[in-house]
Amino acid sequence: MMRTFLFLSFVVVLFISCTGNSGTGKAVSTPETSRDQLITIAEDYIRSRCREPQKTVAGNGAITIIDGQKSYLIEPSKVFTGPIDDDPGKDAIVSVATFDGQYQTTTEHLIILNSSGKYGLAKVIRSDMEILFIKGRVITADVPTHSRSSPLFNCSECRDVLNYQFKGGELVQME
Image (tube, rainbow, N blue to C red):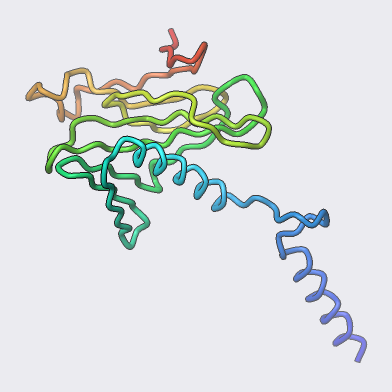
């Protein structure tokens, strides 16, 4: 009887601690919620550039927004979070692949800053770089050394891993 009571007490305590409620009446923000908010900001940005956007969602969560010949691809794996600016909030970069027909034209990196708990689009950077991660206000990216029009663009040896910081509203390469 005592074992059953202790077991049930443990289960109740465990259940209460896992409900996602901090006791203030407000739900705790989960990583999924933040990721969803960031993807929504990216979708809103893309829709603002389209006349008649049509959205499809793949099984892996990738979102494609098509407007005529132009299409945009948002992949959940291309959402990077970490500190970018000087405040303590967790910021983000969402990389959006842009296509004209079936050919990728560029990647748009949406710099999204967290200010007082709210995310806002701060800057859009068009670049063929591939963001690898964000750590300690440093953005590490894999950057092609040749332009998209060069036959060497996809050369695996023709890439540099560079570090950047977001200063004064610009992405600045670190020395």
